[in-house]
Length: 321
Image (cartoon, rainbow, N blue to C red; front, side):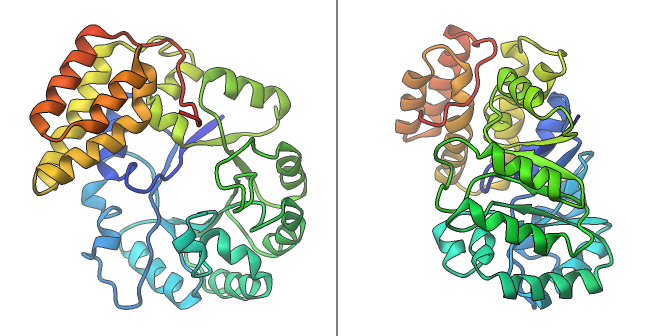
């Protein structure tokens, strides 16, 4: 099985990816939070900083592009080629209202004729491999069959399927019947993404889909960075020392990158929104972290957390927390 790290905006930037690669069993591919390209964007722009080679040491990085304009995609593709990339991912899955409102991400799925024209343009000029991350449709899962007919016209490197619609957002359970349709009908390799938070989730998926050879882990891997270790039987119980070292590495690099106490505190609160689920009394400490108004208070809480509380073996992210 191949394991991919899904992109989470604001979380899985190069600081997190590099630290994960160094401290835990690495993913086979790390997909970047989406780049929203512009025709005049430069290599040194904020949009491209996360994928600069000098910021990515070791992990196999797949830049993800969010756009509904072929000229923007092609322009950014050329920039990424100059950086040495040989694969790009197209985001057709983001459910954010601001993204969908502009007809991008999963919003683009509602405009099948325009999507087909877009894909024809980018694949006809492609100089690198292009994979697609998709949802089932914008409103109804039944839209997916028509989308598959479009995808099957092009030489996709891989189709990563998150089997929810945009309207589902992240609610409910993924539609595994529609995933099976995609897996069986797709002419390209298929990767599964959605609600694998624990080893038992992974094992249940494998029992139902033993033929699938790649899965993308998102919130589950951010919440439990050793999830791949656990799945592979290499780290059933992760010690607090390794998790603390991972935290300290992420913190120290953000401290250098960010200017001022407030941005750093906000960034670490995002970090703990997921990872706190691994600790006993996690809800209690999660609330304390969210209320912290200074880095001094933050460090007091984190020191107490690691000193007093224990890790819960096999714990995973719970969507309703």
